[in-house]
Image 1 (tube, rainbow, N blue to C red):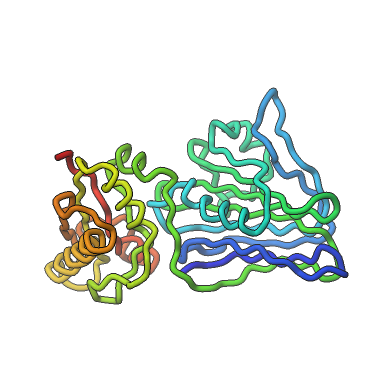
Image 2: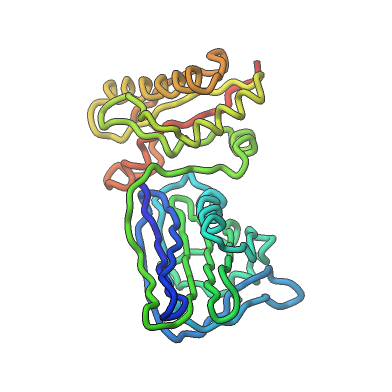
Length: 308
């Protein structure tokens, strides 16, 4: 499931409304939002340099929102990558796309427009910024995004500016789809951190049966393994703390085995590169006292174990 941010904007009263749809992980929840017409705002369009932050000052209907993503496994790049691709598909031009130090670090953070804590948290050691524009002059639409992380949670700031007009609106709606999880560089992720989470996998409730659809994370893992036949990984299933330990260990191992079968049968990965194990609820990533925490704990991880 995915939540969608949808911005509807009428460029003038004589033009039809256009929509840009952006996908967020299903466990994202909105922390704060506001919409104000005839507002003036300065949007960053470049990194902090020579003691100044390049901005584009514009006036229009300004929509602001902050989102919390209950996940520790998505990087800031992964949070923004699907949004970037969607904006490009919708006809936006990317004006700025940088992370932490490249954006200007501390100086960028404290000179850019940012929603206040605790609704939006900026980790000075880990954030990414994206600014995009569609159209020019009085009809231009601007989207300005910041992704950041704490130890246990992702944060996304969304700001957009659209021309004022009688039909201008800014609205967020919810839809459902299978999420697309994109690693900036899967090989770098697993070789640097030693593991990665296959975050888009879907299993039937209480079942080890993997869904029939294509999963982006499996494609990325398969591409990596097929390109590196000397690499060996362990697929490790995890569950929440509902039920007995023995039952959850069995279920989590069967889910890992389902993933291994899909990789060998549909993606051509050599079985000798894979092993499948289950940890049940013995390695949680979050509290099992909340629905959000239990959702984070139900996962399959891939761990780089050795070379052959």
